[in-house]
Length: 276
Image 1 (cartoon, rainbow, N blue to C red):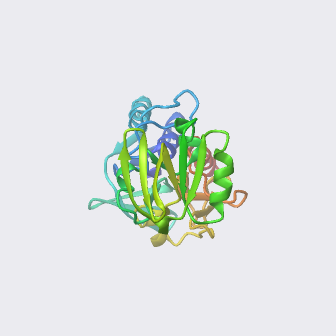
Image 2: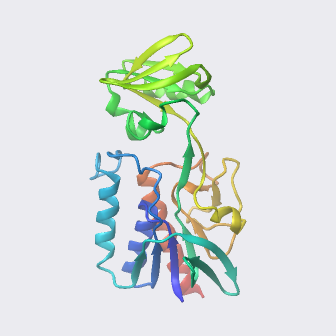
Image 3: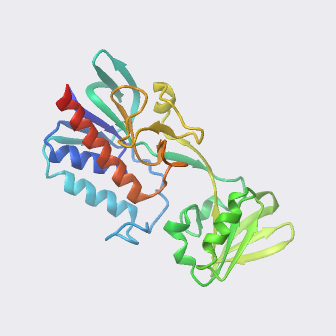
């Protein structure tokens, strides 16, 4: 019987494991090896680690957690989570484990607009977050491939960074090609060369566990949580990109927010164990 099982080995899950380990709580972290930023080579806007490869962040996190012998890490994916009696059961590759609490840190999977060539540059010259990747295009033209009203807001945010900001409807883009200085967008009105492009992919929680558990969701599709990551299912917490507390207008897609969420959920788990 574990005190907690963490599902997901990204920054939110690793921070939760570190916090639980420091409190000597028996913890199992399951890492499927699938990460939203798997194509990213330089992550930004994380204090003391600005520009570091996300794979290095995960490696360093695991090395730090290894110092705490109550935490076990398995490279495996959870296939089911079920609430049974006073605990939760997690199925993993034919094995079954029980825990007082489960922290969902699975992250999300993105679906990009169906534009030929776009996916090949995802995580490099094509990005989603201006706070994470905008500065790398400083002083050069960028494109926002988004036909929604939010595109105007994003364009204004990028005005102090880029030399020019072009807003392009995805329906007008025929293909995206890599060029020496960035990207060439082949549009209905002609070619447009930019240093980089921002898109707003559709996304869904990874792994199917959220739907199977029946946790309450926000309008955005994220799991509804309180500020400590508690969901509508007793003993189940959600952190990182899949989580959205009521006080936020949407999920916070950032490394720093994921780390903070992981720590807060772990604190809540420890407090719940003491209370029971």
